[in-house]
Length: 558
Ligand SMILES: NC(=O)C1=CN([C@@H]2O[C@H](COP(=O)(O)OP(=O)(O)OC[C@H]3O[C@@H](n4cnc5c(N)ncnc54)[C@H](O)[C@@H]3O)[C@@H](O)[C@H]2O)C=CC1
Ligand SMILES: CC(=O)C(=O)O
Ligand SMILES: [Mg+2]
Image (spheres, rainbow, N blue to C red):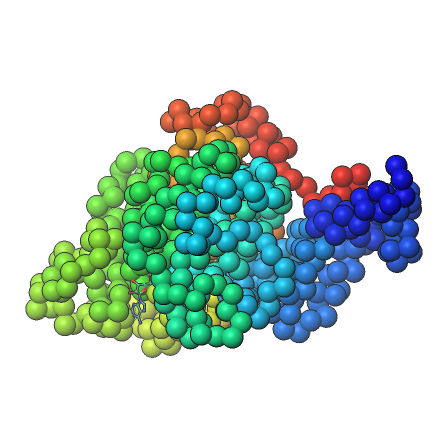
């Protein structure tokens, strides 16, 4: 090979995030690639690189600067980026995911420096197939798409929502072992109704109001169809679409494409598993509980219905879905959701509306405080996305009559949490059983260290997506999601439960995801939906799943 040609190859490898090894290139490799003088002399192993980069990461005080450092690292050397995250899951997930990813989305235009993923907008109508074909993505297993209309609890962030697709895709690699080249974060830029964002100096999306319905579905239909043709094996995860679309999108696409909605179905699957494990701690059957849910949107409705589905599945049909649904009291901006309060309920609320409140009694239930006082719940689930509403008064009141109140402040990011878990432990005198959407510190109460579990859909979507990418079922029916949830429920051992956990440790995310993926595949096989031949027996299938996981290692392992 001539010298000029070799230099070109060397340069393209050094600047290709997937192939670059940086200081881990050996002397021989440096010579062969003609990059001898272009790297510091020391040759490091991947472990040494990880240790050095972890020190660099820890040297930043502000989480957003840590986020920027990691984004830069991803751009320079993707293998090292994932090796570092896998070596420091508990420290780095709060940076690449909630809560810091929320701040990164808010500041997306200010911190953007290099492309990642794909942007689809109305200007490309009629050309989406071509756009996907011409992209550098040749084989895609998982696509996470958002239109940025409801990013965490931060509202309409338009094209800045790309940050959330990127964060979720990173978790597919970290948790599901999907190859980094086979994930695709997508931003459907359908405009934004956030006027101040639209007018802000560095906003990078289209500066128009959100598309009318017909155009929105026109572009989404075209995208889904193009994905099926260009990457027929891919799974599409819908993320953070506002509730005027997300339920309808599921109806429109669930049986036509291999897709699921993370906020409705993923959140439902995770929270139902943790909640029913918390119910075991209370010693009372779920049907004896009274569950107040703050919020009645995509996550709240997904969670309530999933708890009912999982409870029915775990009871072997001894309890009915209707019996569990009766335990729920959903609260939205107008108060308790009932069928008698005189407004036209959004379609997604109807199945969960109380039917036992006389019209004249609705006035007694117009605030969360009223509902708590009058219902005396044993469980509070927070999915309103507005911040601290589970007040000291509420927590103390619930703890006054309830032996082990279940308190789940599930809204993200941390600033939108319904209560800071350490406060809830203190106010409940250590009695509360807590899972929070974002990670929070624990606290010692009466000599016992209490730490919240993280009730976040990150426990399930990597396993669901990975299982479906492997077995390629024609579509993802609800029963596959309930099966994934039941598997997560079972993965919590009695010892873990006794130690106060509601989910296995997140450091075990790959192990967890491999079991969830296995369960997902087996249920898809049972339903006759898979299009790839895989073992039918659990252990053999689990081995195949584990074997398929990408490892954060250089090709010629250092
Ligand atoms: N822990 C987890 O894994 C997940 C957490 N979430 C979080 O849940 C929150 C909500 O998400 P979605 O349900 O998708 O949003 P959404 O917009 O569909 O629903 C929000 C609901 O809260 C209600 N609400 C808003 N302000 C209220 C107020 N002041 N009083 C009473 N009700 C009020 C709204 O009426 C609506 O029913 C977000 O913060 C999101 O980050 C969502 C998905 C997963
Ligand atoms: C975790 C998540 O998906 C959300 O907060 O929207
Ligand atoms: Mg979400």
